[in-house]
Image (tube, rainbow, N blue to C red; front, side):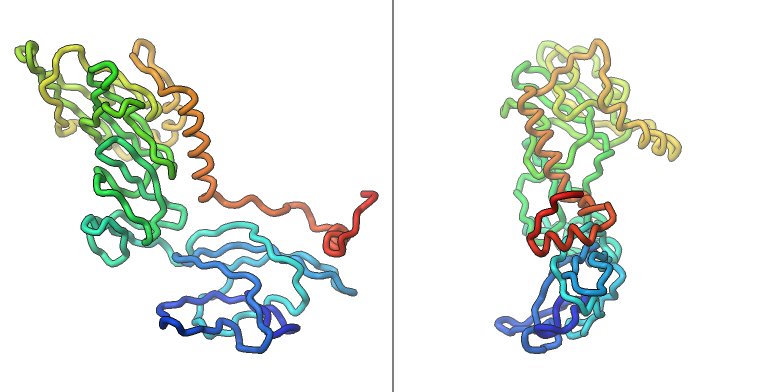
Length: 345
């Protein structure tokens, strides 16, 4: 949004910049002397927000507050004049609500050679992303975090999994617990967070052995050492343990000496009907507990800190609450502008 000259009308427009020349200045107004930009945002995927405009009071002006949705404005060239927003003086402009993309999703790839994202079909295809979507990054050390799909992001080399983040996806993890010196299995869903969190617990010596996102994963446990004579054990993860928090310790697989653990081809798969039912029930099931399972959580202090971080990280992607849903009171607006105090309501 800009004002054309010192006393001219306010214009609103949306435009795309496909390329620029270094050290060259570009005028996004009409070039009138005294023109001034009053509101500007950069939206890589053509996101459109809703703003609330408050006008300066003057005689016979009855409507001092109105809203404008940028999605109603067509995207044109940089030199376009734009649409007239108002000819009255503006007191302030506030963001009421962040919006989603008006161009549809953005297809994103990850280039493992340079460890960066791109839109040019180089590397691994991650999917189609809307403005609120995130990327999941899981390292071989059992640490994970989520990020946006900004091309400026740079990632570490020890990436085990990088994909579009799905909060409803259930992961099955086999880990070696360094404290107990046993192998454990757990199933969980991940939370969106910009902070790096561990799915293996607090002991840095614990190791990630296998991780699977299959609906009904099967794991084959072969025994070794003094227990090598024992018959191999096949574990159906879905029947072995229910879905818990990723901070949970999990359920011990065996007390015998383990030679190797491998993932087998699943023998059953979810039907479309089961997928729909599970999407409705997963939220309640994830917090349940099974009696008789050996399961503990990471220290409560760390867990509460992580939960606070998750909430604060997620807040960036949420729709902003309305600035004020009540009907604007012109008297209060005038008092705010003039600095007067209201003695009686």
